[in-house]
Structure formats: structure tokens, C-alpha cells
Length: 310
Image 1 (spheres, rainbow, N blue to C red):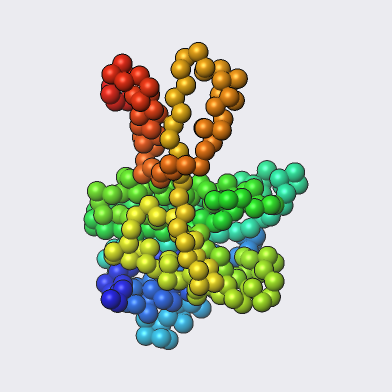
Image 2: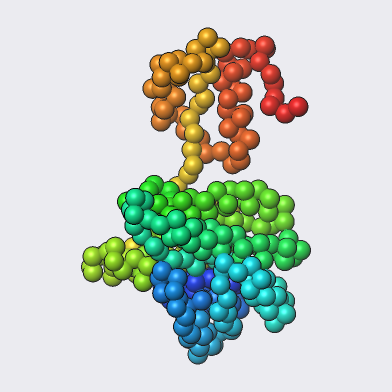
């Protein structure tokens, strides 16, 4: 089986280097027409360059089709124009990889409110802006594949990255709602948590590990998650040739009788409530209410309500 992107138009943000560049190059190799978006700044979000244009030149030199865009993901009007330009030139937008990002790492005690806000603005709001700019087009054409870039910091935490972690877990939450809203329009939305040696992570990896975690090792996961046969609502980790899935999970609800619904009663049942057994990964928030109702019915029988809906 060969996975092709022929006749597809793809937008990759932050594609002037690192992971974004690798995604753009491989999408083009597989037949996609690619919008290479990159503001061209340093990893803290400052400065400008012609990084996107250089990647377009690479794609065209290899026989592919691409156009550059230097807009900021934090400017919604610029993102609307980017999508409009792609539609005018190529007829639609089928694939979006939200990859643009910045780092402003400090411990929370030393982090300025401005640095916290800026990182969320680029990663979370920026991804939402680009997705929103593409959304109506994808609905109208009844086809869309969207990839959000999360992080192990967002899923599991990392010292000195409170701003980054908050933004990245927010993107996983955005994925979970958009995959529900986009489902009937054949819009699939997934989350990728990459581990790669790039400009963003050059201070975090020892030299040998930096080379082993080359960005191209993440590409197979990223492109599968935006392919025609992609799943939806997946969270996938990728790096160094290793790949795994992650889930937001919950256990069976513990229903406490009215007399035990106190702080002390909750504390007495904490071992049950926090047990990591019978874990499930809900597909929507409504399933949390359903789990509580199920626990209630188990104790109350016919006296319990049959549904949480009115």
C-alpha cells in the first residue's frame, strides 16, 4: 500500500525548518501541493527570515509544487488570506499540519505573565486561528485532515515549561472537540506528540541523542495521521524510530451514598476513586456523566435515572 497525497493541498505552519520542513518535503514528494508557512523568527518568536521560501525552492527543485507564506499564525486575517490564496491557486485545502511554535522556558516562579501568554498565543491560539481559517473550506468540500502538535510536556509535564505544557495540553483538548464537530463532514483531527532534535530542542538533548532523534523519524506518524485513511481523535507519540499511542482515561466511577458525600467520606474512598483499574478512554465528555450514572444505577437499581438527558 502506497499512501499518496496526489490532488491534495496541504498547509504546514512553521515549515521553514525542523519538523515542519520535513513534513512539507515529504508531502510534496507524495504529490501534495504545499503551502509552506513560516514567520521565520528565532525559537523565542523574534526576528524574521526567508526560511519558507528556501523550503519552497527545495520542493520545486525536486519537481514538486509549493508556495511560501510568511504570515503569523497569531494574526487571523493573515491566516484567512493564506487559505484564500491556496484556494484561488489550487482549488481547496485538504490537509493542515499545525506545527508552528516557540519556547520561552523558565520556572513558573521566574516566568513573566507576558511569556506565559505569548507561548499560549502562538501554540494554542495560533493553531486555532489556522484551523478556523481552513474549517469552512473543509466542511464545504466534505474532506479535511488536521494535525495538532502537542508534546510530552503537555501530556505528562516537564520542569520549566508551564506555559508550553498548558498550551500543548490545550491542543489535545481542541482536537477532541473538533473531531466530534467535524466528523459528519469527513474532517479527521489528530494530535501528535513528537520528540525530535530541532532548533527548538537543541539545548535539551545531548549531542548523540540529538542526532538519533532526527526530525525525519517523526514524519511517518505525522503523514499517516493526515492521510485519507487516517484515524480520528488519536494521540500519537513519535521520535527516534519509536511510536506509541496515548489516551485521556478514566476509571469506573465510585458512587457514594448521600451520607458519605463529605470531605471525610471522599477521603475514605480515595483508594477506590484513584484506582488504575478498568480504565477506559471516552470519546466525548458526555461519557463521563454516563460513567457516574452507571455507578449510580449499580447501587440504586430502578430508583436511579435511566439517562442524564432531559
